[in-house]
Amino acid sequence: MNQKQTYVQTVMEIKEIAVNHHLPEEIPASLDKLASEMESFTVKMPIVGGFNAGKSTLINSFLETELLPVEITPETAIAAEIKYGENKIVAHKQTGETQIFPLEKIKEIDATTFRFIEVYLENEKIRALGDVTLVDMPGFDSGIKEHNKAIFQYLKEGIVFLIVVDSEDGSIKSSVLNFLYELDLYQLNYAVIVNKIDQRTKAEMGKVVDNVKSVVDGISKGVMVETASDRIENGNAGFLKAIQSFQKDDLFKKRFLPELLQFIARVKLNLDVIVRNSDVDTDEITARIHEIEAKIKGLTNKFKQEETQITHRIRNVVKENILSDVQNVLMNESNSLALSAKAGETSFNQKINELVRPVLICSTNQHLELTFSDLVASMSTELLDANQIAQGINVSSQKVGAAIELVQEGLNKLAENAEFMKRFEKIYKVSVGGLAIITGVVAPWVELIIFFLPDILKVLGIGSEERQLEKLKEQVETQIIPQITNKIRGNIEDNLENVKNEFLQKFKQEMEEEMLSLSSALHQSINSKEKKESELAEYLNQLKSDIQRLESIRQNLA
Image (tube, rainbow, N blue to C red; front, top):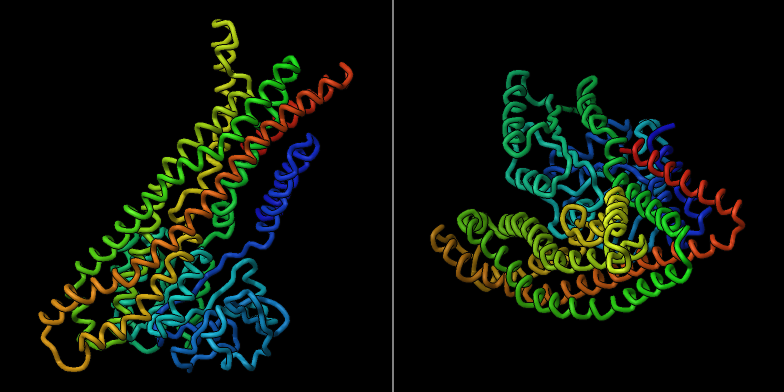
């Protein structure tokens, strides 16, 4: 049994325990969803590089097919996920609709109409890759809009990037280098393939590989650098080695283990509540239920109060901080921007894109995380209070001596369920784990900048005549950079407002579900009292056995 099957089986085991003890329906339903995500999980490997680095040729050679187009214009490039199955192409539109094409129509698929394509092939090389999906990406030098569309999609979906470098370049081009810095910034895995090694002598090739390794080591230690060629025997060995170097089980575990541990902790805590209240008077349990219900009702007012402060911060602090970060990065690179402007409009647009995309993503992550952190801390305290109520930790209602012992026992129980308290990290933590959220927010901002750049350059006259570097640099600093920040100023506030609303709605829903789950466990404690004494003893033994079973599962996973 492989790790995927083991994890899915574990999820079903936890679900069985939750169903057997009549925990809220939301828990088994969420576990079903988690199992489905596990079963459909694949390691996506976007293959990226310069437009002429030979990515498609390399993939075609590896798969022993001539399917992927290699002589296409940059504007027609589109991300292609290569999967095993009956020969066909499934093209995905921005709206979510799909359209089926025969394989021979691949060159006719318009990148401006479709977001990406799935290329299904009855190919044994693909079948052998198993849960690995190779993705042929538009080149770095392709149309910026199409390239950005693909990059934004796979920053949130891609787990491992394979970077193809042309050996003829001698080292790593600046556009590729900037992307490596970007991947390192997001803490994403990647390997580098030096392609077309047949076009250099062995001595020359050794120097090129050494140059590439030196540059890569300067960014991130331990990154694999391999060589490849489609024109020599066994030329794909390095390509395959890079693909296989990433342990699929480790990547699968990294993706799903935290969420699985949170579910174990949540179910275990609910069972603990039932056990701890098994010998408590029904009236007292009812009082605890009323306390938790009062807390749930109070959440609406608490969230309204917090929303006012968050709205103020987003409009007056977050927006301006993001714009300031963009401006600072561009100002620090004004000299290189001037050189790019001198080289022409395309070069300048690409340089702006390379600089703006990562700073917008990272800055937005950072400032939103800070904005939401106070709310999360405050609401986590509310959840802890609800846990303590459900556990019966209430010093004021106990004699002091007995209360100290009871409180300590209850706190120990909560400490054992530390993973439960981490549950909200996946909701609010807008860092690497939040790229799925942030790339969707930032993408239209970058698109807006790229859309208006030609007009900005035309008004300023850049590219219309030979200009001195210092004059260009002055124009970049005093006119272009301020115009770029002003263009996105209005968009930022609307997009961030949407993020805020989605976050608050989701977070409030999660808080209510957690508290309702505790209330449900207390109701189960009351229901258990209706059992005969012998049945109750048996039921409690089963509860304790299942708690131990969950703890054993947790230890085995860890």
